[in-house]
Image (cartoon, rainbow, N blue to C red; front, side, top):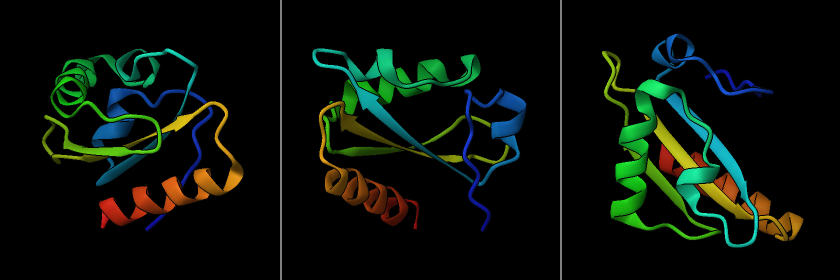
Length: 100
Protein backbone atom coordinates (compact mmCIF):
# COMPACT_ATOMS: atom_id res chain seq x y z
CA UNK A 1 0.00 0.00 0.00
CA UNK A 2 0.99 3.60 -0.57
CA UNK A 3 0.51 6.25 2.11
CA UNK A 4 0.30 9.86 1.04
CA UNK A 5 -0.06 13.00 3.14
CA UNK A 6 -2.54 15.46 1.69
CA UNK A 7 -2.10 19.12 2.58
CA UNK A 8 -5.68 19.79 1.52
CA UNK A 9 -8.94 17.91 1.35
CA UNK A 10 -8.81 15.35 -1.46
CA UNK A 11 -11.33 15.86 -4.24
CA UNK A 12 -14.03 13.25 -4.76
CA UNK A 13 -12.29 11.97 -7.91
CA UNK A 14 -9.11 11.36 -5.89
CA UNK A 15 -11.03 9.58 -3.13
CA UNK A 16 -12.81 7.42 -5.70
CA UNK A 17 -9.43 5.94 -6.74
CA UNK A 18 -8.59 4.88 -3.15
CA UNK A 19 -9.32 1.61 -1.45
CA UNK A 20 -8.86 3.20 1.97
CA UNK A 21 -8.82 6.78 3.20
CA UNK A 22 -7.26 7.54 6.59
CA UNK A 23 -8.10 10.92 8.14
CA UNK A 24 -6.61 12.20 11.40
CA UNK A 25 -8.38 15.32 12.63
CA UNK A 26 -7.42 17.60 15.50
CA UNK A 27 -10.53 18.75 17.40
CA UNK A 28 -10.56 22.19 18.96
CA UNK A 29 -12.13 22.40 22.44
CA UNK A 30 -15.92 22.16 22.14
CA UNK A 31 -15.81 21.49 18.40
CA UNK A 32 -18.23 18.91 17.04
CA UNK A 33 -16.57 16.17 14.97
CA UNK A 34 -18.78 16.70 11.91
CA UNK A 35 -17.64 20.35 11.76
CA UNK A 36 -13.98 19.39 12.05
CA UNK A 37 -13.69 16.52 9.59
CA UNK A 38 -12.72 17.71 6.12
CA UNK A 39 -14.48 15.73 3.44
CA UNK A 40 -15.43 16.26 -0.18
CA UNK A 41 -19.03 17.31 -0.79
CA UNK A 42 -20.34 14.02 -2.24
CA UNK A 43 -19.38 12.17 0.96
CA UNK A 44 -20.24 14.83 3.55
CA UNK A 45 -23.76 13.48 4.24
CA UNK A 46 -22.59 9.87 4.66
CA UNK A 47 -19.92 11.00 7.11
CA UNK A 48 -22.29 13.19 9.10
CA UNK A 49 -24.81 10.34 9.42
CA UNK A 50 -22.07 8.00 10.65
CA UNK A 51 -20.79 10.57 13.15
CA UNK A 52 -24.30 11.17 14.50
CA UNK A 53 -24.95 7.44 14.77
CA UNK A 54 -21.64 6.46 16.39
CA UNK A 55 -20.91 9.62 18.42
CA UNK A 56 -17.10 9.17 18.60
CA UNK A 57 -15.15 11.36 20.97
CA UNK A 58 -11.57 12.63 20.88
CA UNK A 59 -9.18 9.69 20.99
CA UNK A 60 -11.54 7.40 19.07
CA UNK A 61 -11.92 6.47 15.43
CA UNK A 62 -14.81 5.70 13.15
CA UNK A 63 -14.88 3.55 10.03
CA UNK A 64 -17.43 3.76 7.25
CA UNK A 65 -17.81 2.68 3.66
CA UNK A 66 -18.23 5.58 1.26
CA UNK A 67 -21.02 5.44 -1.32
CA UNK A 68 -18.81 5.22 -4.40
CA UNK A 69 -18.17 2.51 -6.98
CA UNK A 70 -15.04 1.29 -5.20
CA UNK A 71 -16.74 1.46 -1.79
CA UNK A 72 -13.76 3.23 -0.28
CA UNK A 73 -13.20 2.48 3.40
CA UNK A 74 -12.86 5.80 5.25
CA UNK A 75 -11.33 5.66 8.74
CA UNK A 76 -11.50 8.91 10.69
CA UNK A 77 -9.56 9.47 13.90
CA UNK A 78 -10.44 12.32 16.24
CA UNK A 79 -7.58 13.79 18.24
CA UNK A 80 -7.98 16.36 21.03
CA UNK A 81 -6.10 19.56 20.21
CA UNK A 82 -4.17 19.28 23.47
CA UNK A 83 -3.35 15.58 23.07
CA UNK A 84 0.13 14.38 23.94
CA UNK A 85 2.31 13.06 21.09
CA UNK A 86 1.94 9.50 22.40
CA UNK A 87 -1.87 9.79 22.19
CA UNK A 88 -1.50 10.86 18.56
CA UNK A 89 0.67 7.82 17.85
CA UNK A 90 -1.82 5.52 19.56
CA UNK A 91 -4.67 6.95 17.50
CA UNK A 92 -2.66 6.63 14.29
CA UNK A 93 -2.08 2.98 15.17
CA UNK A 94 -5.81 2.51 15.78
CA UNK A 95 -6.56 4.03 12.37
CA UNK A 96 -4.22 1.58 10.67
CA UNK A 97 -5.64 -1.32 12.68
CA UNK A 98 -9.23 -0.45 11.69
CA UNK A 99 -8.15 -0.12 8.06
CA UNK A 100 -6.97 -3.73 8.27
